[in-house]
Amino acid sequence: MNTSIQDAERVGNSFSEDGMLTARHLTRTAIQRIAEGVRPGMVEEDAVSLARSVLTEMGLHATWHPIRVRFGINTTKPMKQLSTPGVVLRENDIFFVDIAPRYKAWEGDGGASFVVGDDLQVQRCARNAEELFHEVRAAWRRHDWTGARLYEYADQRARQMGWELNFDLPGHRLSDFPHAAIYSGSLAQAAFSPSPMRWVLEIHLRDRERRFGAFFEDLLLEDRFYDH
Figure (spheres, rainbow, N blue to C red):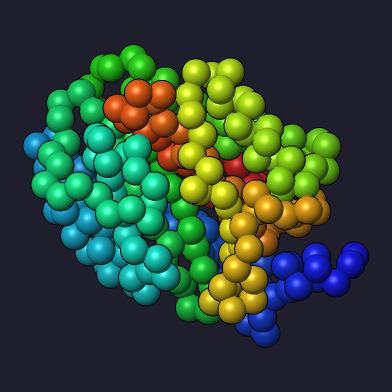
């Protein structure tokens, strides 16, 4: 292993795989609990307040990046771009949850999309975001590809599916808190094959006309850590 890879994948004194997995479990649980409280007619800002309350109830430190619950047209925006205020979830719509809570010394980070109503295209976008996450993850396990190659593949597959991949979400390190003090580069720029338990893979798909988008994000892990 060369020095650059060592720098990118080093961890702090508190790093623990069990701790990271616990943080991941709590993150995925929180995402589901937040989504269960979101209803058509709700304003996006109220959903963010709901998410904050869920994290507090679960005993999680609020977050190391802003809590994002995005509705409708806001699902197309880059994450660092603020939502258009006052967006209401419609009867046939899509929303996603993106949270990064901290559990004790360990970081969590995860996201998922949810559909209300019966719009088939919106349903397909949400489904494809999660499917593409797992396709890219499978390519990582099968081919030992670099992070850069994984995102090239993700872009190719997104286009084949009929979507646009948002490269403003290029994946990143995850670690004992704070990962940015260890390494702040993106997964999409990594010139090596990423190790498990160290990186977050982010997939943000957008409708080509920018009407809606879908997001899925999770820790890069082997198959045994997933239900499917």
